Length: 204
Length: 255
Image (cartoon, rainbow over all chains, first blue to last red; front, side, top):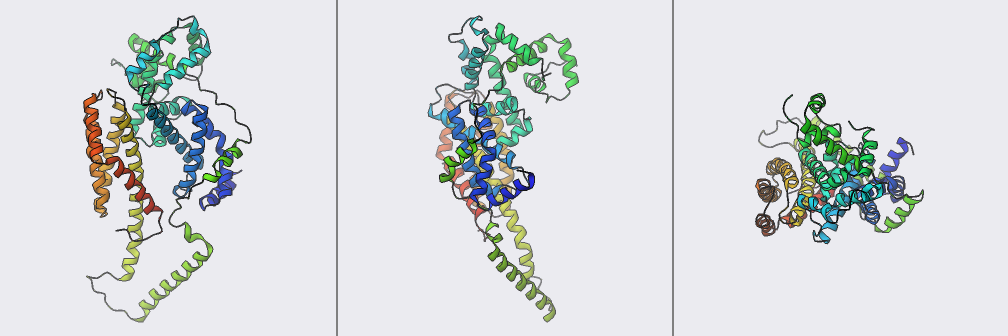
């Protein structure tokens, strides 16, 4: 689908043509799922986010400005749906996991395995997932956009509808919590190797 | 450069967003404390690899469509959408022709000095669309603002006791600044009910902003009680919905 065709499809979808909207769904579903999965870290939640995002997008198509990029607009909807999904889950679990810095600090301490067992990359990633699970929905969303998606603070701010300082603060809080949570792993041989391999690449 | 850099600055530096990168480069070469902090941040973030999303096949888009097609809600179409249907467009063209003809006829028929105190119909017609457009922009912006505020209030209502609410405070601070501007605009536009809800909202935002970031359970409970007492979440949600409906409705006089 070239740009002209895409614009025509979008225009038809905005006028309520469901077949045109179907073309948009087919075109964007996989990228929407990918983002939703990175945001939520859970396949089933990501599927729910995909559905909810397209339903919201369809309902709000009238508010979409035709000069804007549909992909960017949809991206924002997906990010915000993901945040809502994480909030809902968090509320449902009655905050039992906790959201505070203290909780993040305490989490890895419980039953911390020795450095030998942490040498395996899979185990490290499991611990990383646990640490990510200790972030608040907003922190996780902001961190995902910054770390996985490579979005700037300004872009995160626009995507999540936050002020720049709130977006920046969410990323900082996430990094701080992760740094504390993952401290025991930093000295393990597996993580040192992993860090060295990844640091050799793009980061300063 | 003698001053140490904060964790925030070093995090931005890691992500390539820091200002004065050269200063940080030079400082990290000479300051062991900052270099250690930076190494910790970099080592932590290097451990966090982008997760591979489970694969989805070529037919995935179609599968998603099949799942949602029966759930598609009614669209909030823009107010002008009904007019681009060809039959209505034709009627609109006829109406426009009549208006133009009447205007020209009026000019040619008789030139009488209009009373300065009473605006002419043509003047009223000219000024009405811009006021309407301005009002619509305001309503849409306030509706978005209320959406964001609702999310913050839900966060506050669900925050565990004795949490650090610094993130929410920064967010509330941003919303507070915007809210004040919208409230003034709403007053200017004669939208008193909007201004009243924004005023209520600001009171809670101010309370959130001025609370200690490591908030005690009692302080948090007090904020929540005030939000409940003012039925703030309900008002914010209802007003947001109402403004969106007004925005989606065909052009009409808004009281």
